[in-house]
Image (cartoon, rainbow, N blue to C red; front, side, top):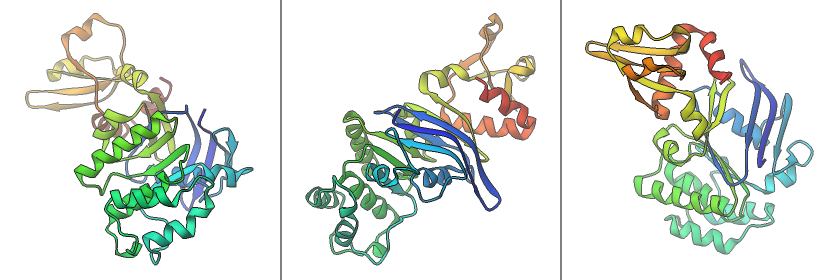
Length: 293
């Protein structure tokens, strides 16, 4: 496994990541989803060594983060919504100041990427827009050839054209064997690009599933309101009724009765909406049902 997180616990103030278990094989992309405050950024920062572990372990490319931190970080490409580099640095200064930390760093490639991404070597980081700071971090990460990318909302402030280029480059990186863990509110991107989906809720990982298993785990059914009320209660995560019918997110089961409904595979936005609605309506019992599948 390229990424192995085992029983990870981390407490920050009143918030806590609890017993996180996550495994992602090499050469795949995993989308990390969840509502604001679910713990996505905290998890990523803990995995990259910015926060120490309270319990559990993080192994990246078979190396334990706590015992072999320098080796692990050498293979990490980091792109964060909040730029971690000192804002007084210039684009060139970032390469010169941090490039030596990575054995695979190439100043020539860094310059090539910054030029392609519309960055000037003399620009100061503090003068860059949020979108340009993302481009800068991406250029720097690419220039030291990491085997694992940890990315927090990297596409949130990108224009449509560069967003397309971002995913093109990610595909190239995957082809050479890199692994990508990426959090994003733009779930339509993850619907198309992610091989695995991990769902965080209030500091707990409810599931991590490959796309095939995920599609087999949930169904979105539509029908008349009375039909939705006739669905088995233990199979319904949540439902929404309207004046002319409604829809429900359910756990699949073999039944001829399902033929009475219009059935769809929910996209990630729909999945997040109905899971959140289900927890508000039914509490943790619904979440327990989901995590067991």
